[in-house]
Length: 412
Image (cartoon, rainbow, N blue to C red; front, side, top):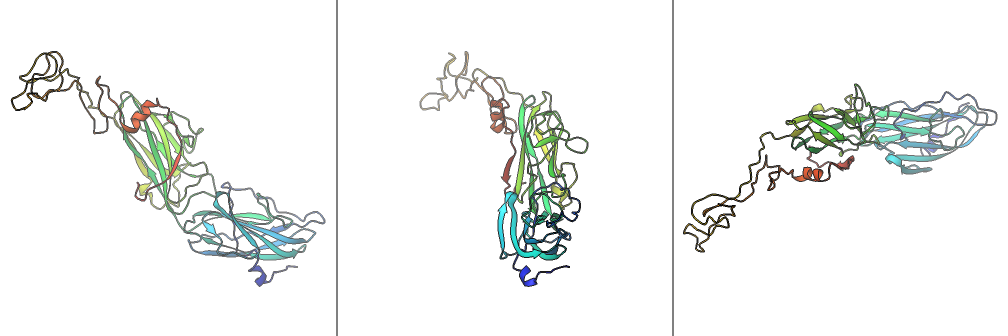
């Protein structure tokens, strides 16, 4: 005999709820449950039909709870969980709502009913697709006895994955820097999600990732732990392994929120005879499969460029200038050109036989390359400005870490 709850009761109990699992891996489904031993209930629930909702749409379906045991289930605790792109359209009396780990929305509802052996009841499941909905999952059900379910899945507690009718735009972020041949240089590359959907693959381990091809004539000597060497068709070694030509990087929690940027910093050793060199970053997956949800491939790739000057030759240091007139005693110039009211020239210091009036030259030179290399010292040794100088000062002891940051609205 099949017992059906009154519709008015259903709409004020655990109805209007829906669920989503936290785990990304596909769970194993237990074999169908036979009738339990004498004196025990054994609740089984039907599966929800799949869907691909547009953001803003409400999903509204019923599940059937059937008692295949030999004892009645006196009351049923029905739990629903939704991943972050879904939410409950309204609260319902008899349900307790909360947000748990990984921003999962949960409803725990008490159904005040008795399900006799062989009988069935129905309860609705409702959820709404949010503007950020994309790859989602719903976890729903009870336990075999009607108590709150555990964390596994089976005939009484199920999981449905879905892909919303939406998209997410992945943007690869490269690096343009410069260094000297034989030097060390850090590069920071990134992967940004311009939305509108958040990203976390709920159906497989082919998670969204950034492919990094290291520029030629350089060696990656320090690598983030989140970046593994890439082989023929997937990761081929542990994260952080140095010395490889290609890496694939992804977040530990497999999640990229809307407007979030994942950043990965590498340290490169540059060959002594290197010329300007380039590499590439690409938005892809850990198995180098272009995500179907990304409908804008134009910004999936970006360049890594390390400019290495080849025409840089520091001028030799001089020991004074040369001009006409003035003193030749190797000290400061004291002669003038007749136009200085103090009778002193504007020349600099000179060495033996130094400047003799007029405008002299200092004992050190100042050179630059493309405006990005700092002045040389008095011994002609080139110094690298900015972050490169800091890196050199640390002796390469750069702490490599994946940094998350919110991308600026107009960042590339």
